[in-house]
Length: 136
Picture 1 (tube, rainbow, N blue to C red):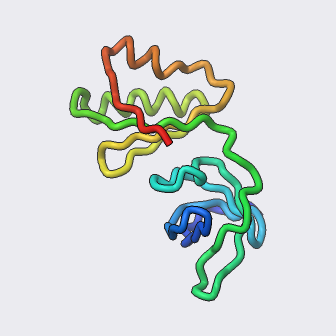
Picture 2: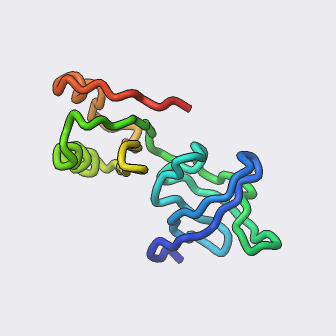
């Protein structure tokens, strides 16, 4: 049943928040995220979850059925580098099978496969780049 990504509204009772996200619909009520939710760290790229429609027609998370198989890290970007330079790193991440996104223009979320040999810390060190990492 895998189709093109769709945008749905999701309510997470545990986090007490509603958000809209792009997901792949795997079955009638099972979805996989195709992006990172910036404020809900449970919903990172590749997370699969089961929902039920609530009275408002919003998908309410019943349970996470499969945690993301990616290591997720978030950083505040600075104006130290141009957008094109950040894109070079993004291209490298994608070539390793990862995913990256920016939110609000200066928050980068990077998802790398767990067995990925790309070492972000070494890359940052090489370019004397010391971004502030956002921890959960």
